[in-house]
Length: 264
Length: 297
Image (cartoon, rainbow over all chains, first blue to last red):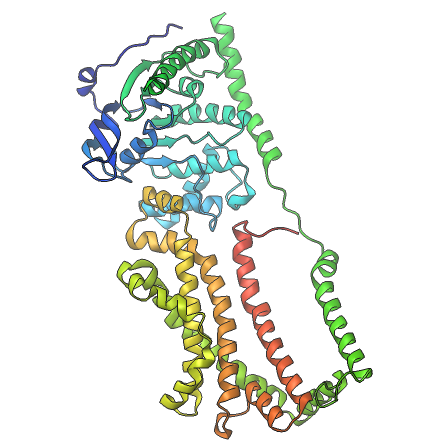
């Protein structure tokens, strides 16, 4: 149960194959000159099958970084590679389409990926079963609870069959009990599917509960402030003492980063 | 100690399915079908009471001779006018003349307003060029178009359709524009990550997401079609045009037949309501209900 906190060295990881490679990425909004710098020289690799959480206070640009990796926006400088193709993305809001049933939402993702019509229904059922919602194919989005919606959204993201899953505070709007259950679910599905996950959160315990590696971003502009590799064995629980211990350490760093902004 | 902790954890993981099923059952939205009796009491009874009240007040005003009979006919006189038309067999032909014109004009307006709305909502230059005019046209009473339409096209059906189109096309186009504008950006981003960009994005995401706004536009477009047609029929009456509801009203005025005028007004109102209740409201409700956007009860 040893916890090692190491500053990861970019050179060491450069040789390894990667699910995502972020190199010297900067992003500013409001024009190239005199704009507001949101991300400053971020370099980060996500290894195949790795679970990385990006942690930071508000204004650290973690969602911006995720949008860049998702290809929804372009970096002002630097490059982002995702060799496995377009990554799947899950939002804080479920973003399910209310004009479609749960099953049809998943089928739309399959259809846009080019899965033949004959296979879509079975594949959608399989994915629903994976998130333990078999039998909910015909449910309308508004008939599902918040936790169920996020599971359908997860199934829809998995339907993209991408190697890399990006998650933007996907459980932030859920109640504590449901969030806890979805942590267990996500860990299970991550281990079954061997996906790479880049997970954004401001919740330190959540970050430690889920990830193999936690990356702390400083705020305004967002820079990588610190990294921790976590080898507490899975399945973990958010109440585990090792999780609590490391959370405390990371929280101290996070507070330090936040405090710096009050000193001007 | 480490091993017991692991088994405990695995046991807990096995429990996860049961825990999740329990949460789902607790959190799921319960859907309740409203019984027919409740629908009758809550939805049908109030308007019936309102109509009966209006009839009673109307009859009282007539009975107490509040005004001359040629100014305010008795409900029974209006009823008599209706039965006369029924017996002569003209009732349905008059209704059909107007309703068929309005529906045909509406379908034309739909065919023109939909692509126009798409163009305005998707092409920035077109929006900047004609968007404000299109929005402004909605406040122009379509009766204003009757005079130029008669001079351009003569006293015939095409003049009627021109007036309907000028009234209904802006509503339908504006409804679609509003629908597209109100598509939540989150849906567009979600669609983008799924690979729905460009034409695919418009087809799979924007169009279905804009449907409620579009339907509201259609509803309003129908109301404008009907109003515009009545304005055209009342002003531009000619024996060649066939007897519609508007002409019926105008004939009543020429013959100082207040019962006939009341009958025409009531029929115009009823047709407008009936088409809305039979076609547009059910369509709109079905779409909103599927999306969980309809308040229950």
